[in-house]
Each structure stands twice: as C-alpha cells, then as structure tokens.
Image 1 (cartoon, rainbow, N blue to C red):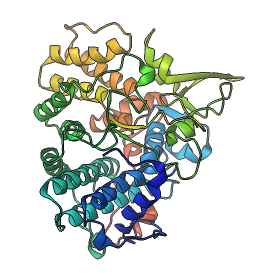
Image 2 (image 1 turned 180 degrees about the horizontal axis):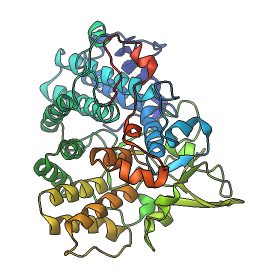
Image 3 (image 1 turned 90 degrees about the vertical axis):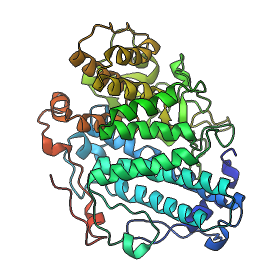
Image 4 (image 1 turned 60 degrees about the vertical axis):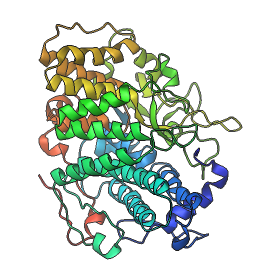
Length: 459
C-alpha cells in the first residue's frame, strides 16, 4: 500500500502516538484524537496505520533527528560543511559538551521511535492478524528499530538496549557494550529480512522492503568487520535490477529515483510546500540569495576536475568575502501549488557499491573492489582507477569516493572516519587541533538525569 498522503496523516500520527508512552527519555504530547490501543491491531488496516505512523513521526517537523538534524550536526562535526549560524558552532569547533544545544534530540528522538517500534512488534505478535500481516508489519518495525539503534550505538557507544514497552524498566535500564548492540542488530535484521516482502507496499519506496533491509544489514556487517557477509548483503541489492545508478545526478533525490532503496515522505504539518525539511533548511530562498551552509574548503579541494557531483550537487554563491558552495542535493525549498517532487533519501544504491568495495578490499579482492569504485566514478564523469592500483591507495580512494558521494547524508563521513580510526588524521587537516577526545559525542546532561543508571560515555 502506498504511504497515505498528508490529507489523512493526522489520523496516522494519532494512531502512532497512542502507542507511545511518557518515558522520561521522550517528549511526546498526547494525541488530540485518541484511538484505544486495544483497537490498533484488530485488523490489517489499523495495524498498517501504526507502522505508517512511525514513518510519519520520523519526518513531521523540521530540525529533528530524522528530518535533517542528524545529517546536519554530523556533517558539521566532520568536514562536509559548516553553518553560518552560531548555534552550531560547538559542532563545527568540536567543542561538544553535555549541555550543547540539540544534543538531547540525538538520543531522545531515536528512543522515541524505538519505543513506538517495540509497541508495534508486541501489538502485532499478540493480535489475531494473519501470519502474513504479522510478519510484514513486525519486520518493518524491526528494521526501523535497528536503523535507529545503529545511529545510537555509533553516536554514543554504550547505550541501553530496550526491546520491550515496559516503561518502568526502560527508564532504569543500564547500558550495554557496542558488541552486544551489533549482535542484536544482526539478529533483528536477519529476522526482518526473512519476514519482509521483497515487493514495496505500493508504487513508491517509502516503506522498506527486503532489499532495504539487506542494505542496512550490509552496512552493519561492514561496521562489525564481517566483510564476507557485507559483500554478500550488498551484492543482493546491487544485483537487483530494480535499482540503478542514475546517470543524471539531478534525478537521484527525486521521489521517483531508481537509486532509492528507502525514502521518507515529509509530513507537511507546519510549512506549506515543503518537499524535504533538509531542502527547506538549506536551499537559498531565491536564485540570487546566499547560502548559510558552506562546504569546507578542504573538501572542495578534494573534487577532481569535471566531477559532476560538484556541478550538480553543490550550489555556488558569491559574497564580498569570496565564492562559497552550499549543499544542493535537494533542490526544492518549497513548492507551493506544485506537486511534491523530492523525498528524504535514507538508503540508496551508491552506498552499497562503496560498502562492497571496502569489503572486497578487506577480502583481498582488489580488482573487484576497483570495479565497484569505478561504477561510482564513472557516474560522476571521472577517469577510472587502474586495476593495478596499490591496496593502500585504493583504501584512500574508497574513503574519498564515499566522502564526496555521500556528502551531507546521514552523518556517513563522521561515522566512517571514526570506525576506521582515521578521524584525527583527516579532520585535523580541516579543524586544526583535532584530537581523539574530539571524536566523543557525550550524552546530554538532561538525558543522564532521566535515568539514574546511565553513565557518561567517557573514553
């Protein structure tokens, strides 16, 4: 079923919010029009509405975890781009403290979604729905729960692993090791992959399918160091002919993109004409206006001559102090009176080529790794790498292609540099005196106060 449009989003949100609780982690207002929880899973239509509500809650307001905030903060913390707004200076200067603005949202909002997913899983399993519906809805919830746990563990390392809807236990639960979280992710995603339909539920890609789960699993395997399974999972996605690297870069982030594995449709509840909140925040107000998010000069210098990504995914503007480039993957700020053209891109095919390239390099399949990198370089209009490239040079080439290809998307650059222990060596070139301590994202003080068993993630 296609994701229900904005005219009836309010009812979907109400259904999802009734599944929420008043955990101190979460700041969720009670819905105005409540439907009793016991009715939420009485039939397939109601059960479907609960999982649709999870997706709509991820993207219903600007500057929230799933609507561009994570991408923005981690891009600024790394070397993708920086903001002209001083409220983000702590991230640009890597001077993040437990009291830094927005930090609490990186914890509370993923746990809010996880709480919703836990309730969906429990509600479906305890219902009289058909086995087919149970598997589909539960698999989508497991996938979405794992998606958010992936970011929590990479942001904060030791985190509570909450897998039920018991409010009292979740508010007092202590932290577990990253290894335990990753083992859980593999288990949960493998079950979701087995249960979820390979077809999308409708004509758009706004609900995950089997290949979206495989894509996230490939990333988890890569981060876990399981390169054989990372290659296998990425190959499942790449070999599916429904997905293609779009030759026209200006079509990659459209809602009709064949590169999309999973997108989120914006719930437009506050600002008319929004396509994506990221586009609304970052696209200049008119063709001659300046941007307020500028790509770091060191990153601009990394683009090779004739790289189409510089031409199509960045927008130059000139002021008295010089010419700067602002991210321009999403090109629509608002489109009042026109159809929505762009959706928030969450998972896309290009990442799978780069995941497989890195996995293959680790498995000493260097020529195959070169082929994967060259698929991305060819699309960008660049000279292909030679098959004889040295392994060390290929590793740097993969790192560079992932940086420029996924620039500004979902914090990839920050997480990649940290998991490969390259953050200090790379970011010190842009940030100056960048040290290992600067790689730590602390837990917000307000979050620590909400659970007496939480401990700050000091290194």
